[in-house]
Every structure is written in structure tokens, then in C-alpha cells.
Image 1 (tube, one colour):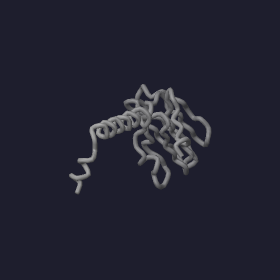
Image 2 (cartoon, rainbow, N blue to C red):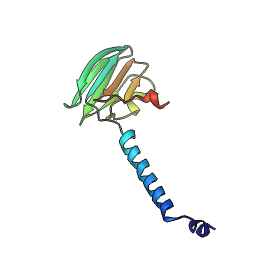
Image 3 (cartoon, rainbow, N blue to C red):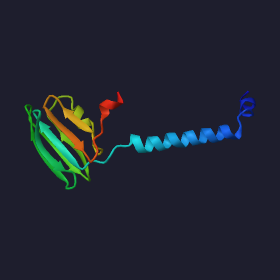
Image 4 (tube, rainbow, N blue to C red):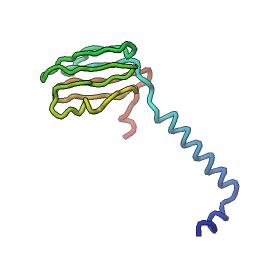
Length: 126
């Protein structure tokens, strides 16, 4: 059944399928991958606590209503290493490295956002 269907596909059809596939791969690689981040913006209680570069490895203690959250920066990646929030969602999010990524510790009102040269506008995708 399938062999009979393949007989009807002409060389130009194969070329169109190949070029279309290559175009989709090219679009995916150029538009879907995010820009690497340069800086981290750390907020506590809705206000900017610190804005730090990602180049030096460091640990930053951020105060919140529930206690201290610890943000770890290593090898141009950042994460919330520990937090006193009950469910630990922001800690489980892991390492962030692309511009536009964010980790939120809502009960402790602490957030970590990475920024780069180009800002990723996630809301335009919806």
C-alpha cells in the first residue's frame, strides 16, 4: 500500500520536502534558542535587592519574610540553592542560564531573573 503511494511522489516533491524540513530546522535553531544571560536581578519583597553579573562565582543571601534564601552563581548559571518556603518549587527549578528565565519563591517573596542583551518576550508567544 505504501510502496504504491511512494511511486506517485516526483523528484520535485522530494526536493520540496527536503527544503521545507531544512527550513523548519533552521527556524527552530535561530528563533527558539534563547540568548545567554549576562546579569541576574534579585528581588526581595517586590523591590530590587541586587543586580549582579554572572561572571564571578558567588553565593548571595537574600532576606525575605520567612527567612534567608540563598542564591548560587556558578559558571555563568544561577539558581536558588536554598529557601525557607514549604514546597521548595524555586529550589527544584534548578540552574538558569538563558536570558528571560526566572525562579520565584512566592511565600518568601524572593525572585531571581536572568537578563541578557536581548530580552525574551514570552507573553508574545501566547
